[in-house]
Length: 255
Image 1 (cartoon, rainbow, N blue to C red):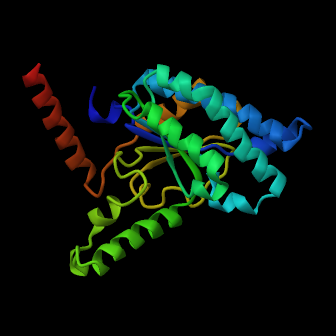
Image 2 (cartoon, rainbow, N blue to C red):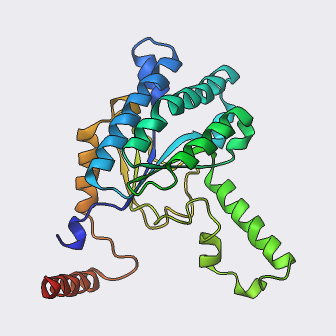
Image 3 (cartoon, rainbow, N blue to C red):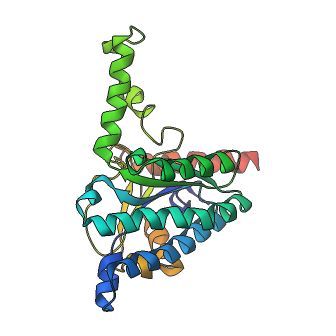
C-alpha cells in the first residue's frame, strides 16, 4: 500500500450535533447526549479494529461552560457514569485511555475517576483513546508556554533556545503524533478552538450528519476522503510522488 492509501495514525473528532439531533425528534437535549454515547462506542470499536493508533474525542470544550448550568452538570455526570461502565471494557480490549484539558475544574470526584481510568489502562498497547474535557487549543498552548517560561525563569532553558519543538513537547498530546485526520459532524465548518497547534497540517473532513447518527459508513467516507488526498507538507506534488516511489522501491527490496 503506498503512502496515499495508508490509514491515518491519529484521528481527532469534534462530536457535534447532539442537541440538534434531539430537538429534531422533539426530545430534551440530554437525550441527544445520551444517544451520542452510542456513537462513541461505535467509533472507538471501528477505529480500534482498523488499527488506528490514536483517537481523540472532543467531549467537552472550555467554551461549553457558557451553556445552561443544568446541561453542563448533565454532561459531566454522563462522562462520569460512562467511564464507570466503559473503562473495564476498554481495558479488556487493550485500549489505553488518556484525558486532556483542565478537568480538575469539575472537582475531585471526576478527577479521581479519570486518574483511575488512566492508571488501569496505562500499560495497554492497543489504540490510545484521548478524551478532551474542559479543553481548548488556546488553553493548551498557554499552559505549554507557562511551563517553558518557568524553565527560563529557573535558568534551565535559554529564551533563544525556544523553538517549535519546545512548545510541542509541552502540549497535552506530546506523546502522540499530530492528528492526520480531523472529523467534525453536524455540518459545521470550523475547528472551534480544538487542538489548534496540532491541526496545522491535518486533513479536514466535515460530515453532514449529527453525531448520534455517525456510524461505520460515515467513518469509511472520512477515511476514503483522507486516502484520496495528496499530503504535500510544503513540497510539490512531483516531489511527493518521487518520495513515494522511492519508499515503495525500498519496501520491495526489503520484501
